[in-house]
Image 1 (cartoon, rainbow, N blue to C red):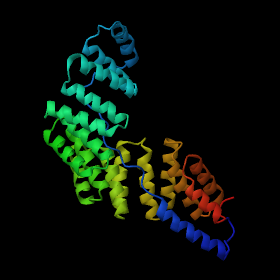
Image 2 (cartoon, rainbow, N blue to C red):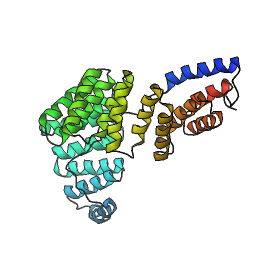
Image 3 (cartoon, rainbow, N blue to C red):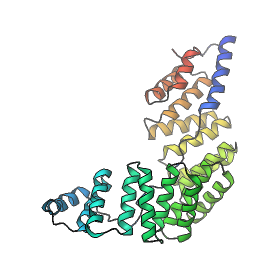
Image 4 (tube, rainbow, N blue to C red):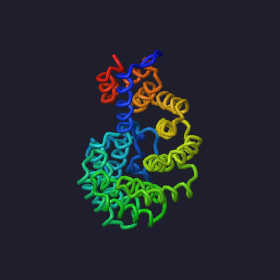
Length: 315
């Protein structure tokens, strides 16, 4: 497309491309289940120093279990999960298992994506201490990763019922599980409960907006995302999803502005480049539209770019 009027053939091509857009464009990723180890760990800002301090005692062969545990937590914070798990295992063999130690082993196994082992450790932690709400939450997260959604729901419900600091995470995770299962009414009810308890919860608003977009309730989704952006103005996913809602309501300049903000905040946001590129082609801005599709392909989203080339819309 160009500033001149398109030929009839080019009009047919554009129509095909817009149909493809409806199939390929979707919401930004929903916030994932809350990460493991979300309570009670020592909060030192310098895990490297902890490793330097504890390693000589461990090397001497006379270190107590607490030293292995401390170094394992430092490795965990440095995302060296295999080393963390080895130290947690050594702490267990030195002094015997505890609920906290088993929970830490489950967390490390989860982060290494050894989900079956993580389930076993979290279950052992709960056998040692049935009130450990974060173990229920994190076993639920692991069941979610395994696609065992009914088990995940049961664990999230138990964690939420125990209250404390795991309650909000468990409610969020249960809502996301319902959403993944397409039980959208229950998902929205949980997101509403989270928002009522914590008005500063942008992630719950984002995920509820995702549902509203799925239900084609675009004006409600945009309003919800307005509130989320006021809370978290530097979150690119919020602008991306609001762009989807605005584009569906044919508010194209506003949608373009939101895609612009999304890619400024996340320079490799492939889906945002893809959608902005297709919208620009729709608005007869072939030069910038094709440039956006090229960037989308550079960052891993090539399907739309190939289609645009096949249809003769981009060189």
